[in-house]
Image (cartoon, rainbow, N blue to C red; front, side):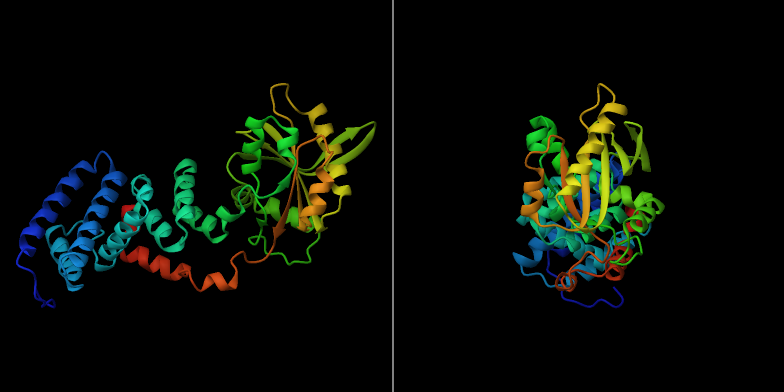
Length: 347
């Protein structure tokens, strides 16, 4: 083979024939189950490369030879580059260390698998992101955004009184629909932006805003009028949650949390429940998003409030800490790896 001159084990030709047969068989079955069969094949090949190198002492040059032979045998196939074979080996290695990941990745496109493999270091977080990607149909770009903004660490973290104000079956779902902090670094506004500036920017970037809020949120309006006792009041942002079956009032505060914010939001929730809530809807939920908060003060502020309210911070600047950035591949590095792997064709 031109350009490749390594000493191969005597059993290599027989092994190559076995790999070729499985590639061909998997390609046929893939017509009915593209992603599942592809990932199963990749895990199989990666696992065998791992075994040959670790248990039988085969050198790293085998990967280059296998890549050349498979591309020659299947010239129309994508995914048999040296880089991608190494990705297969790496994924097989991680799946052996984390067995419950093996079945999960079979339900994801290869590009998603590489994002999980290289952008998520924690094993629990890797499983969580994979399950969420499947459950919500995240694209690879969306999955990358959720990882970059550390969604796993933020999910369900808002200070709230949901457990005291909602039925148990509902309170846990509502709590998991919250985050702390919320990341609004896509707005392009500075840390000193006023509430109305942030509100206007959020509505201009509604698609990205809804992604940050999470699955199920439907936008109703901003500065929504509610009339109580002949006086007009305005709700900052109003949403309806399709899965929770309730209205969600979101109040923005460009300052640190103050206890009186909870009283005002409690008033708004009573008005929405009385004037807009359908009899079959769950109670309206309120969220106060502040620049900063003292958790103890927030907990005390909600202690005797009758309506379900959550309190969280928001961030207008980059979400990833500097000390974490060095341990993660850059977007450019990951995209280069995906291109090498032929992920765009396979995903």
